[in-house]
View 1: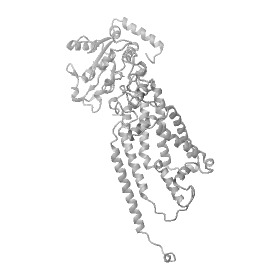
View 2: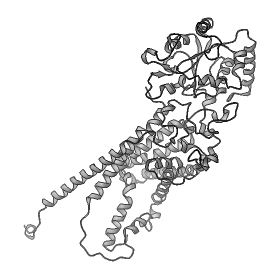
View 3: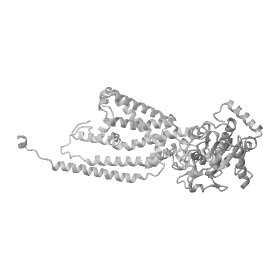
View 4: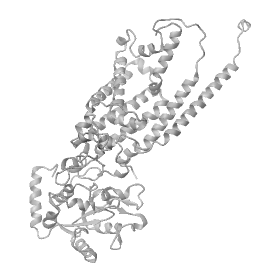
Length: 335
Length: 221
């Protein structure tokens, strides 16, 4: 893992081996709320450690709607049994935001609202992983005007350690690495101000981007199909949010290190940052206005009108002075 | 709810910029209209010919130090010149700035490499600090300085400093520093039309006017 010493690597290997040897593997419960299953899709692409390797050897994934064989009552029973048996010890993973509108009716599982489920499950959790930008920051459901009143896990739960693993979706190996860290050390990794693991969210995409030299040289692609784009120049002018996005896409890449968005020719959307849907548009350069400049016309009109009014006053003053001017005659001076 | 850094950045790029540019345009048009509508009395005297006396000559002449002045006030001329040229380069030739100007008024031009801009920024910051130190230490300058002089120095210095800190990733995370940088620029835009910083719009006009009036009287200045 990034940012850990080689000694930690050995500790991690032996801890993971111990987890494999143990008769009882640590319980993991995954609750899906207002989400798109993209985070689950992403974690299944993790190549090291793999999700199947983790499920079979390291953790007991007791509830994950997409991956579990059980459904309906059986699934809910497994959830409650796991929460009861491992009270205070299980790791709770949440993907998706929690809608608070209409008393939470926008998203229910087994007839219960996400809010109710989260509160119940968090009580016995050793720690919570808010997987993906929706769980971490509210994500897409939270985008303006936020019709469902969607909020993040940390907006609701205040008394449990929470680690945010944002991204839409997060990088597969980052997701599994955070789990591996928890299994190895029994604690959460070092976090930044937004609750994200510093190891993966410590630097911006821009600073680690292989196209950075082109930014520094002032070489920019102007369209997605011009010569600059074909030469692999910087995508800043096409709206890349790399400069303000903290994530490790540029270093870990995706799909077992195959590629990542910027390498495939598209700018960074900033998906691991809060409110990335409302940050002024994906295709507007970061230095461009985030919204329409509505005041310009009115401001110009008011400016000219004020200038005209002031000039009118000045003229009136001048004319008054002229009218009030008394001619001095020789006789006046000799008085 | 307190704004997070991304919300602050989006605010300064959106409503904040809208407001600041609005006040800037309003103020600039107001002041220009007011100044030019003042008018001048018609000069009825016959023009006296003097070779080289013209508005254009005065614009150039006052850009360069008068004879002997460079020795008398080297800091004012050298640091002042370096600061003004440096500021123009940083503001007008840094790629993200050009992109902003292009999105506002539709014209663009080639940018300079960002490392070069970085170097010019440091030189400009140092020149401004030297000018500030001189204003504090030189008794005449200190005596002549009012609140407006200190205030406008700060308004000009902060955008440069925060922009440089943002690019260099110093003190605060980039997102926060970038938001502060844009916020400082917006403060500058808001106050520019109503302070002595308005010389950015009037300097050449007033020099040309003085040169023409003096030229009419036969004085080449």
